[in-house]
Length: 166
Image 1 (cartoon, rainbow, N blue to C red):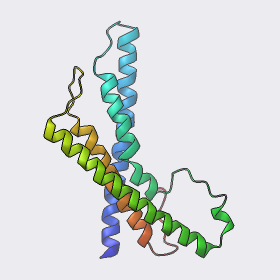
Image 2 (image 1 turned 60 degrees about the vertical axis):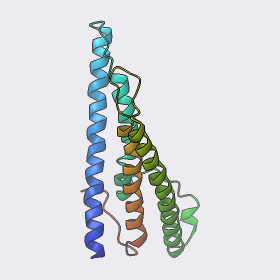
Image 3 (image 1 turned 180 degrees about the horizontal axis):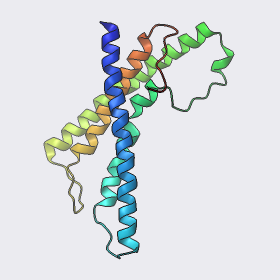
């Protein structure tokens, strides 16, 4: 049961990682389009800055759980490498607990922001007028999934590592 739950979280997390890659590709395309329109045709877009601002937020939080799953984040191991493997495992589990606590706080506060933006109908004061609930929802969704991935890391049997490449 626990293994099946971990696999389900892994599938969700990999999906979010793929969405992050698609968002990054979308940013490249829309920024290039805006540059061409602005400097070649002298007709800048009015939406590119707003869309890409939200995509940066998306890229920062939504695929974070996949980065943790694949252990592809930057890590400073100078002090950690000085400990025995058993102590390293305890430190890794303690950091997972701290990470889960931080993610719970960010999910709770982010959900509060999103609900408030929805309740009051907050919108960007730009030509697109994007409802603020959309980018605000990136925070609780991203941190909830990151917290779940920390939970997987916390209860993963010793020595069983997630693969870095599929």
